[in-house]
Length: 150
Image (tube, rainbow, N blue to C red):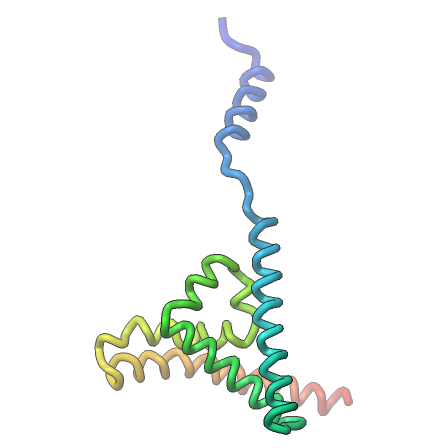
């Protein structure tokens, strides 16, 4: 005698629930929040240093902060630290400006054994090209929209 259809469906649902891996989304969100926040706090410390110790203001202060954060992102990527942080924090490392530095540096690091010019330099510029193209195109579009609607 066969089992009723409802009973088979119930057994199937219970088995799927027991074998299904538990979601780690909430834990990853918390880690991403705190690591992304920590990166932003480091950025604020760099900004405060530029403002108070170096007496920078306005655009100079913003540029200094961005340059230092991009440098730190590229440096930690080159040392292999950024990837370990990204593995732990997920999206928390991809959103800030250091994520941009990581996305530019990481592909180039894969080709460093081919030499600085033919490996590292070539790969870095092949990645930078589309990023810069979309960045410039996006800024032109935003500028035009600002001109039209302002």
